[in-house]
Length: 312
Image 1 (cartoon, rainbow, N blue to C red):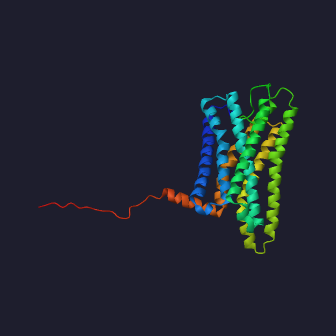
Image 2: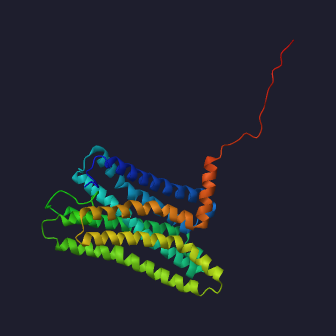
Image 3: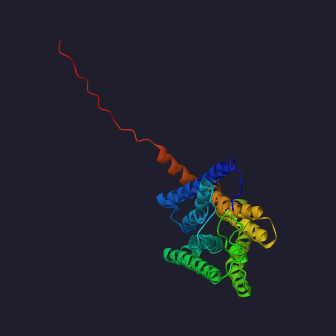
């Protein structure tokens, strides 16, 4: 579906969506460059932040370019294979965001609650294993939901009431018995929705109790400032995700569901780089250093001037 059938409004929508997409890609690439180019940021927290930025770029890239092409060509048609591919990649990168936020909460839990064992627990091998585990869990989720859709042999209609191939909307088009599909979807929701949220809540409950035991106010502020950015991103991600779930659960209009999905898939990844670069002092310094080095024009240390004299 399109957000508007008004031909005068569609170019404005395309410009808005493309601007948000380019801002998302540029912001997340700047975070990746700032972390990789600064040796002081070669730490587990920023390693997972780079992974989250890459997942955000992939997450947004599965929907916005296709939506922009649809607006440009005035066509909202997608092939069956293309729809399954878009759904597979959307779930893969969205679940990567979900699991990486849990891993980052675990990293902050170890750093604040067990600081003396932090470098032993969060060693490079363990960090690589956690990243691989996040990818494999996301791949499993994407495969399971794709197999559920592939089992659907009859669709009641071919119009998807969203601007991309939303898996929940695809299953709603099933005209056959959907009890087994619903059971699988609910199990997936518990595994990849409820359990990560519970893990993050448990980690931050331990973090808050540890911070409150710090005697000095300055120490409490310093400890909490290290996880403030992550907590803001968690609230934004799950808040918009719950909004999308509620909009699909209750009988809201297709436009309201599409707007909720747009906030979840485009607006949230666009804000993540700003949150981490503005609230994290180390990232702020690294960004300034990266931008200053990018715009500095090298000046030669000396100039040689040769004057040619004329003979009288």
